[in-house]
Amino acid sequence: MKKLLCVLLLLFCMAGVNSQTILTLGRVKVDGLNVARSGENLLVSMDIDVAGIDMPSSREVSFAPVLRAENNELSLSPVVLAGRNRYYLHLRNDAVPGVGTSLFRAGHDRVIHYTATVPYAEWMADATLELGDEVCGCLCEVLLSDRSPLTTLDFSPKVFSPVFVYRAPKAEEVKTRELKGSAYIDFPVNRTEIYEDYRRNPVELAKIRATIDTVRNDADTRITSIRIKGYASPEGSYANNTRLAQGRTETLKNYVQRLYNFPFGIMATDYEPEDWAGLERYLETCTLPGRYGMLELARSGGDPDAREQKIKARYPQDYQFLLREVYPGLRHSDYTVEYVVRAYTDVEEARRIWRTAPGKLSLNEFYRVAESYPAGSDEYNEVFETMVRLYPDDATANLNASNVAMSRGDLVSARKYVAKSGNTAEAVYARGVLAGLEKDYAQARRLLAQAQDMGVKEAAGALEQINRIDKK
Image 1 (cartoon, one colour):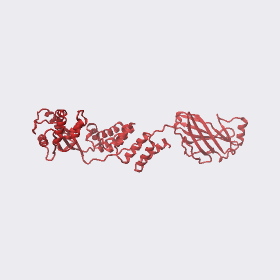
Image 2 (cartoon, rainbow, N blue to C red):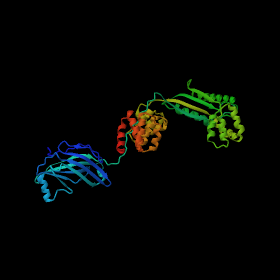
Image 3 (spheres, one colour):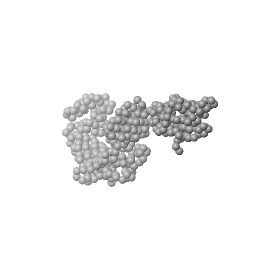
Image 4 (cartoon, rainbow, N blue to C red):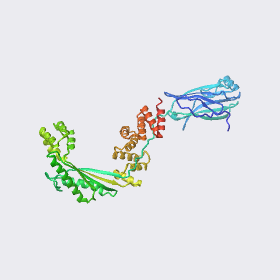
């Protein structure tokens, strides 16, 4: 039905901020619309320009702002614009329909300055403000009525809710892994032969075999090398210790080779005649009276026999303790089993591996497992947390873990992860998001703008949120 009076309004204004002019498609103009919350009250003001209305003398139109939100509705005090006869009729009768109604004369009052104050209620936080109008005839019957939206209020608490941007790691062409350990094989004094049942040798040799068997018995892996490096302790001559370290390492290699018959080239050896680095690590944390002086001598360089003799001569009691309690631990054989793991292209299989043997997954496989779960789910987050535990120094793993931490509100962990996330566009964005969550809005703006320049499309929305929250 065609309306006599059109009050279709363009939605432009923001609640709580003075609007620009809102033009109608007809003859009414609303200007300066302002909706603000002041303490326990809601204030509404606007200018209703009615200069373009040619109102018949016996008719009137009433304008009544209405707040609506789901099952709630509140009509604000109305205003009536009346033709000449209707205007004087109201004056003679000293009555205008509606509580708090204000009366204006068409053709005389060209702009209605409207204000209203009502108690604020929580349901109004995101209510719609409409302008209702009714055209009445000479017998006070309603001829036409309508409501036109003015604006939607926005008094909900401003919360920064960014989109988290994850990064897919590069796929590994070859998944190379290592298992490492140290064995403390007991050899007879000055000898290089291994006696399998001598002292603690049964336990120490079993450690080596268990490490190798862990890889060798896994159908998904293939051993590519086994490296053994032997060490002797500093007591005695350097020349003799060289002979012992080299000979004992070679003996251990032959022992392993006999057990497994590895192909040529799989096994490799190295040796360190005296483990001075191990002695230094002990002296850095021990409580021996002469620890600082012995540490200075150990680090002094030069002839190792001379260093050892100075420690023995200057700190005789501490030296006896080293001989008895420390030096045996410096006679060790470190071993590394290097192997490759096959790729897991089936996501369901990769899920199973994640639960049972996550170390066999590559970063990219972890990412694909995560994506197989709903974003933000417990499983989704857990995959990324497992990834960063296994790859604690990888920038992409730390970036994705920072997103998980931020999504859970754990900003302490997020700071730790994001510091190791590198300088990719996604990492810059993550730092900007973290700054926003920590309410450092200046830093957030700077980093999010940088991320936007680097091509992160989500940065624009995050910046918009920051600017709404912090209007500086």
